[in-house]
Length: 111
Length: 114
Image (tube, rainbow over all chains, first blue to last red; front, top):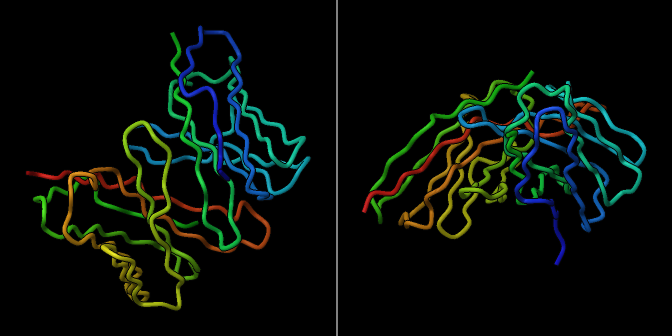
């Protein structure tokens, strides 16, 4: 089935560790996005990529990094510089009429 | 930039209609979307409406758009317990070179009373 696959669904990190969240899509979409969701705050854009080998910072990029070496893949690394990384992370790709298709999310908890 | 506002909670009785409201600030928003999020899951696209439309109906869902007031609503007829979720309104403005993504409201928690 076509869609967005995020892994892992749950992830625990010790302070000072970097962790990488995987996002893969088989929808052949060019643009991909990473959002962070906190209770009562809605979705906030971390990074986005319009095309392979290109990506741009969103509204809250500090403490995060991404890469886009393949069209299908847009991994997000949460670095030790992110002071409050506990959150629900959502990856999405953009369809032909601008709608976003989301993965099931990854919940990161810092111990 | 675009701003999208929604009320945080709506409580309805099972079998009644639910109406979730949304306002947006950018009059050049071209597409408006409704998403549903169940606990611990991603966002599921429910429906969308182009800015040149006033209404769109899809089974139990009716979307109304008032461009003059920049107001969007989602009506769910015969609300069921499975409709309990967070509903997000989102607006897209073609930026011609920026993120060209969506601006989301903070979501409305729909609570179903038996």
